Length: 279
Ligand SMILES: [Zn+2]
Image (cartoon, rainbow, N blue to C red; front, side):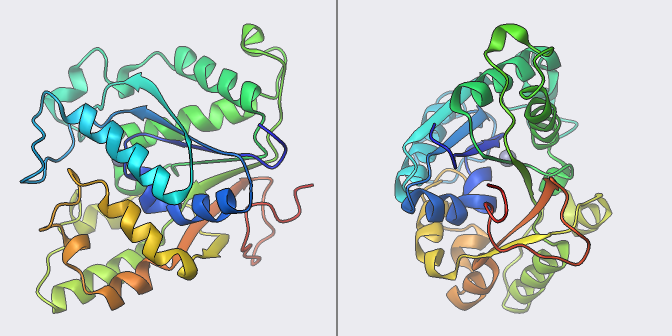
């Protein structure tokens, strides 16, 4: 990967488009090499009616949906780590020995360190510690990607995974809970139940990092929606995102929010670009 590369690390197909899809499209269009790596194929996600997917073949649908979304966003390098979706916390799928949440930490980090050292990205973006709504695979992604970001630069760590590489910046997705609540409230007024995973109270209780990088992607709104809706098994015709009036969706999806954890951003400063001040 040439200098200026962007590596996105997420847990399930659709996580990426929701949080960082338009930003990936923006940099890909500028010639930045963008790689999307997904820990699982979302084996135990929703199955929207009419898609033809079954619990047995959902992973094949979701792999293709991710490839379709990335193609819409101009990202051609899509990779899978091959773990299994752990399902929502407290479900039987948590116990599956292939579940990402049960994967051996050192093994996962070795894979990610090798990827970072091979690709040499300038920026890494991943889930924040809340995982948006606390999904165990999102939280595991945050933990492993953060550890790998630092370990990749340390020659004493994973010495068989290639020459050390210090990526310059680490970003977390950081959609402000107030923005989400505002959307949910507006939808409710118009008779649409957002049905937040874990309930809205559960969302409010999760510890979050503040957004210190807000990227205006209003010019890419249409492509972001098209990419989101290409995750057809997850966002069916009856999904609140599909049913939401376009004006509300446009407000909510016209900005993407991040927290730059490394290097730290001075208090009160809000960046508007991943690559500001990095060279
Ligand atoms: Zn997810």
